[in-house]
Each structure stands twice: as structure tokens, then as C-alpha cells.
Image (cartoon, rainbow, N blue to C red; front, top):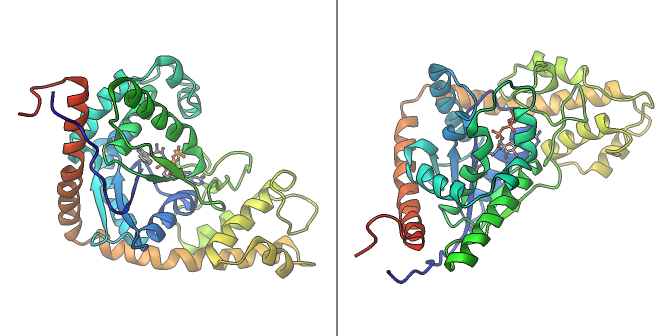
Length: 341
Ligand code: ATP
Ligand code: LTN
């Protein structure tokens, strides 16, 4: 068997992915995209961002709609500031190594640990028959990350359990077969890590919630943003105070305000001392629209451009150049295929 070493990379390698499974909302932006751009703009980092279409088909998708959403999401990544000159941006299914390592990770996992995943439990709840893809979803996600020897994975805190599983699987393989993978760490923003639904602050803001007023889509027009914020659930004590336990609705809105405006939570409390929720919400509408307007405008410009395909083809080529040698390393560890000469 060939000698196996993990080549060192100089920079801090970042990997993350978003599913092309619906309109992105403020939670996706604040929990993920916003961070992606900050990370890319730090010279210490080497960033790889993925449109995870293989994850999207874990639930039924209309083919025309899925294809459209792949391009929409790519345009949105770019509109939010992901720069293909600095970051690698690509579509998961264009790099077959994801499927191959995904299978190896599935074979290295146990049904017990997969059935403990809360995302699996909540997404399978109420379905008469549960697609197998939903069950093995986290092993594919582990493959995505490990395929690039990623050091850090920026995600919302809803993904913590999947990141822990990725580390467990990598550790298991390292311990049983010898050093194969770098152990990645999750990277979570303190604020914005979990944006809650506007109509029910006990649930996370989600693409798939039935009530459209529960979220703010990045593509919503100004009027819709206003309507959603003015209707957002608060409480009856009338005080602008950050207290997620007792005042989850107001605290969620403060969180959104703080991350988008750069004002700290403390300074928001002083700014709105003695004022009511109406004033606070009106200002929040301006803050949100001010942040979303330039994204919406850039999105429209980019979405129409033929550059998107070139960017994604170039991205897939660069991603494959990193992923294929890692896959070869893993296959070597498992004794799969013909081996390296
Ligand atoms: P769904 O809500 O339908 O499960 P999702 O919005 O979680 O979908 P993804 O595309 O998988 O779908 O999420 C992309 C990124 O956005 C992930 O990093 C995830 O952690 C983050 N994210 C999703 N919802 C929120 C939220 N409410 N607050 C903060 N981050 C979030
Ligand atoms: N499971 C994630 C999306 C995702 C991902 C990844 C995130 C798939 N592969 C790799 C980071 C790294 C989600 O549902 N948000």
C-alpha cells in the first residue's frame, strides 16, 4: 500500500454549503452568507462555498425548479459579496467525489447515531414514508467537509450536531485506519447564529415553514418586509430589552437589528429606552430594507448574466483539484479500487 500523508495547506481552509431548496431568508443571510463574505475578505483564509444540490434532493424536487434555484442561489452568493476571484464557488453534483466519499462515510456510520440527529427527526416527522436520503444526509455533509481538509465550517447553530457527527466519523476513521482526515471545527456567529421565526420566536426562521410571514426572504420587496416586521410577535410589557428567555420576540428583532446595523445590543437598549415597539419596529424596517436593497439590485443584474456558468465551471474544476486527491487518500486507506502505482 502507498505511504499516506495529509499534505499541509498554508491558509485556514473554510468550507460551507447552502441548499438550493427555496428562497433564502434573513436567517440564512445572518447565520451563513454574511459570515462567508467576512471570512473571504480575510487574507488568512481560503474559502470554498458550495451549492449543495445533492442535499436538496433528499426531499422531492421539481427538476425545473431545482435547476432555477441552483442558479438563483449562485447569483445570491455573488450578490451578497462572495467573490469568485477570492473564493471557490461550485455546485456539489458537478464534483462526483462528494457522492463517492458520501458512500464511504455512510458505511462508516451507525444507524443509531444517525437516528439521533434532530434535523432528521424534525424533517421526517409527519411523513408517511421517510426518504432514506434524509436519514443519511449528515454522512454526505461530513463528506462535503472532509473532502477539502477543511479547518473551519461557518454555519448557523442549527448545524452543530452535524458538525459533531462529522468530527466523530473522521475520528473513528483516523483511529481505526490511521491518520486520514483533518478534524474540522464549526464556526458560529454569536449574534445571528440562530434567527427565530417572526410569528413564533420559539422556532427557527425556516424556508420550509408554511406561514410566509414567519420569515423575511432576501428577495422580499420593501412593503412585504414592512408587513412582516410590523406583524412580528412581541410581548405586552413594551420595553426594548434583550432577554431571550422572557422576551424571545423582541430579543430576536434586536438581534437582527444589531447584526445588520453594527449597533450593540446594549446601545439598542439605550437608544430605545422609553420608546415603544412601534418606533423600534419602524426603524428596524429601514435597517432591513437598507441592507437588502443593494443585494436585491445586484441579484437582478447577476442573475441575467451568462457569467454564472463560467464561474461555476471554473469553481468545479478548482474544487475537484482539491477533492480528488483527498478521495484517493481515503480509498487507499480503505483498500478500495486499483490503488496508486
Ligand atoms: P430549512 O429551514 O428549510 O431547514 P434552512 O434554511 O436551514 O432550511 P439551509 O440551506 O440548509 O436551509 O441553510 C443554510 C445556512 O443557513 C446554514 O448554515 C444554516 O445553519 C443557516 N441557517 C438556516 N436557518 C437559520 C436561522 N434561522 N438562523 C441562523 N442561521 C440559519
Ligand atoms: N446541512 C446544511 C447544508 C450543508 C452544509 C454542508 C453546511 C450541506 N453540506 C457542508 C456546511 C458544510 C444545512 O442544512 N444548513
